[in-house]
Image (cartoon, rainbow over all chains, first blue to last red):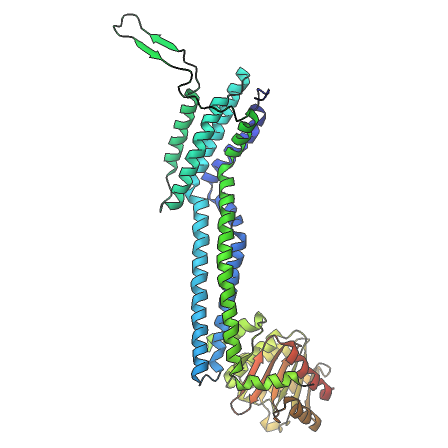
Length: 291
Length: 171
């Protein structure tokens, strides 16, 4: 166990920033748009590559109208090239859709997580105050909130991914308040034998508690680790969105780049065959070799 | 026609290395118009008489006018210089500008040696009209009757060879 007692208080401004960032993100459409643009940058480049190649092939097919396409071979090649153009158009649309979907998840669907995290960061500020007053690092409160928040955020994130609609922010903030209340109440020390018999009443309340009722062995986590975890949790939605998008970006890029390469090789091969069948172009071939 | 014009515009603006066929006077005018548009320094024409079958196209004429009034170079080799009554408006414009700017707008009648070199270089024994812009794009007319040509907006290999033959006999 670490000797530090005041750990949360020195990081109060960090938690304040977390509250500000998370709430701004949840509330401001403009901020969401700005951050959204930073995600999937390389995949969007790939989408523009698709767009360029699609336009290029479109133009090449259009100028083929002057080609002598009398033979069945050349007509077939032109048809295949047209099919390739359609395939590129479909891929381009599908890539656009995938990018929009991924951005939708990060920008809109997990929006309530940002509200929840802002409230949690606010809660850290509150128990930071308790820590200052009592001079004790509130391990139990921190651990409870961290554990519940991690479970909540992960469940929520997967729900958000698979749910067709964004989950309402109201639910998120209600859950946040429940968690905060629960984690605040839980470590309150209730005497082992608590009895309350108000005068003039026939019945009294008699509660027997054990100090180990809700206890989770957290000795393996040092105070410093709990602090770092709290700091990370305050920006968790941003971290989560970035990590998920790095993976999405990688897989989208791999998949679409390979498909793109396959299309390009096929188009090159078809064009090569088409040029081979053109007499006019054969005249050029001999000229190119001339000295 | 618009879709063909857009396609040629795309190929020329993006300097796409694509050898393509070009047939008929209207399509020929479109390619030549875009060659003029994309020329940065100089353009070379080898033509029969720069007649109006191709050059009468409004867009081409507009572009030619713009080109001639710029500071770019325009070199024209003609198989025949027509009589005054048979001169096309495009050739008339070239002649007019060549008086104003004799250093950069020049037209000449081809010498016999030029024909011979073309015949030997093309190996088919034919003489093909061509246009070459800077050192990158070209249009070689392989069938004069049908204005059928092979074009490319980014092939310095062929373009440089055409330029070399042209310059050997023009200057």
